[in-house]
Length: 323
Image 1 (cartoon, rainbow, N blue to C red):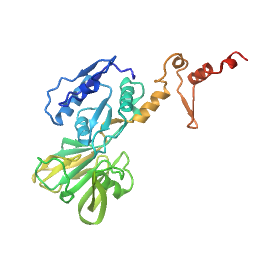
Image 2: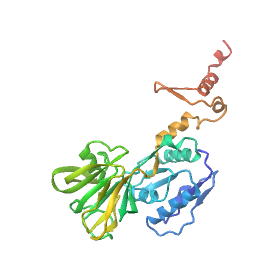
Image 3: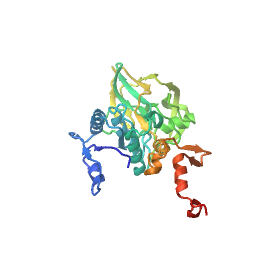
Image 4: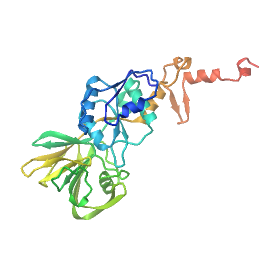
């Protein structure tokens, strides 16, 4: 429907791609990446790298913050349509799949300028001895533990610090702590650092689905792009977007930097709106009547020569013959 040439799937153990096209009669080729699967997040990282190398126009992700973090490591400037399939996510969003796919097709087709329908997101860079070793898209938690086996983090009492690229009261998870503290969403150039402990400030926030907790704050500051936060609690673990990933030993110098080089994310509504303004979804003679952009007047009327042509064709028969 969007005029793209090919759909490329990442293979997986659940055969999501195969099940999606099973029984469909498609006019475009569907291919699957030739990947050696490991059964972990590295599969998503490898698939995104390969897709970027092949020059795909858009990547649709199904998953949560962790899945999108894995993809963001290697997708480069390929725009993402991140569809949330979990319950505790900030980066991806809930949307109807057909609409999401149509928007992805519009972007991949090149019908609309990327700068008009995408936004560059922030990310958090993990630096060890000054070298980039990992990233997070939403939050980094300094966690008082040294066991990675249990990846998820739930115990607020073991959290020593949180660095956020996003802080929104409407989110669920640690992003809501910063959002409830600041009362407003952070703009595209700022993040926030929270130092946790038995402080005078107590913030109530939805840490997880069904879990509302009170978080003690001993200090906080807003971060600008390029600012870094040193990890001073050692030994510890860094949880990236909710999962324990990086060990910090006592002899390590580790810091967290706010960056504006996160992945490009498609604004689905804007992409479809721009495509409609350029008559991308119209077919037949009316689409050829004019290449002028559809003008929105008073947010109610769409007026362009192509629409006028259609209205003329639909006039009552008596009026067309002057009766």
